[in-house]
Image (cartoon, rainbow, N blue to C red; front, side, top):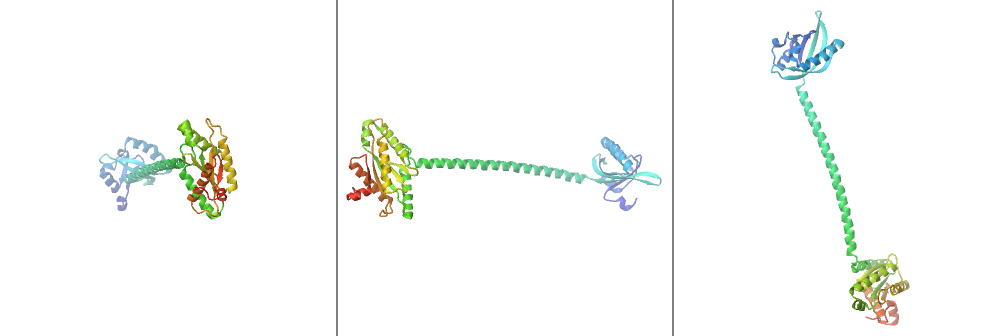
Length: 334
């Protein structure tokens, strides 16, 4: 045998048509741990398991007899230690010296199988990593959705808390703090635009007598009912608030003095005409309208509205007084 073929980087086995090994190179012997006499003149199938013999008969012989060659047949052969060694076999039929020979080249695929197993394992790991990533993304999306839901709930709670912090518990009207904030905003707008606005201070007449005569529970009912009347007869955009005790305030944007008087008198009559369970209840109202002479100070506006309210009380109650009317009559009450 040619030296180069004898030590080629792959196994070489030449067998007869009957399957007897006629020649073998040293590379194959070294790979399998055999001596030449262990293989040559032996039947090639002695190196195979029963399953491989069946495959050899059902695939190798039919195809090489039909096509004259076989390519990439995966076959396992037993080495000298009885271990199964995988090979890729390429075979070709030829004639030499009037005889038919089957020349086979065998490339050991142990490394390849290891690589394939590593690739399969890597693919499984990649698939697992992608699955875990998808799971993590799904969980992250769930967490984000939960965070958004909690944020929405928190915003709703904050809105409710803000509303509660701005609301009088007994009457359901806005409270004094909310009113003062709106009054500051209205004064700022007035200083920028000069658009007038008016302020009402309203007080329930003889409220102490109501409590003393009918009890505080009925007094609370009166406060609630007066608040309802004020809210019902207020115009859209008007601010109605409980200022403290039996005292209420209203803030009317874009309202001149003449308009404020008409609106106040309508509210006064609505309270007086209400169907009270006990003695009739009335209110007194003091009005102040922002003018050019007004200092940029909510305290001044409140003080002057309070003076007008005091005048309504002094003049018989159940009436409306505008601060400007007091100025026409002389110095207002302090």
